[in-house]
Image (cartoon, rainbow, N blue to C red; front, side, top):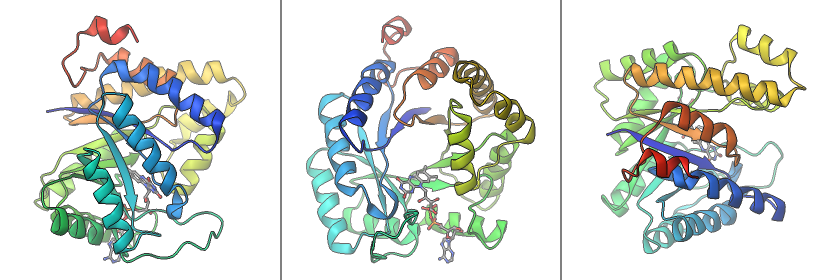
Length: 291
Ligand code: FAD
């Protein structure tokens, strides 16, 4: 089964709340399988994540999936959080190590050092109550000592009890196909869903990519850089490029797509409609386009 989903981040202020509400209004009719909500670096938006997840779950008729990170989360916090989610009917969680905040917020390390320990804990304590998603890196995690160390770490995390993985964004389909091939050769069979970053703002994309190690190919960087101050050109070029890129991934066997919406609807919605992706609940194409 293919899984098509969206990712939001918790809004930081009232304007952000309005933007996210409008984005949800536009994206929900497309019929995603679930919408996930990020956990701020070092736990900085833990309350925001909880609030946003519970709102999406309650109001949108779409399953919501909180991200939970090791950083800043100790065992007692984690139990409380998972109990709250369980009681609210949440069925899916995205478990990560988390990124340290860029500025020191005094966040504690937490009980767990790596995501595999978090996966192990949730599986042990909550059995099959949650569907567990983990992160992975077709271009390898920037802190990994080597490609094979990173593949071994991924295998360990998958075998700790994950159901599926979502990739960091990337713009090179070969990196994804090779990564999948490598982990299959290691006996890891879980679905690996590409994380897709719509291209709408070159400066922001370049900044994110420098931090997370996702490569913007030279030819793409040059095209975008030249038009960095022309948002409508970037939008058209980005929608066209990412639509083709996603089609290549799906044609090559990708088991779905997870869109990093950055709380904006337009690019994700147009890519989804260009690809004519199916709604999770089987709604007709016409009903989906009505949104
Ligand atoms: P891990 O799997 O723990 O790996 C981290 C690094 O440690 C890797 O280099 C790995 O090779 C290495 N490693 C793993 N195990 C060991 C070990 N036992 N010994 C030595 N090295 C080891 N960040 C947030 O803060 N909030 C979010 O909401 C968020 N959402 C994300 C969603 C997705 C789909 C993805 C792909 C990433 C997300 N991130 C988020 C970013 C993520 O937290 C960072 O990339 C983080 O640096 C790594 O997280 P991980 O879960 O992949 O870590």
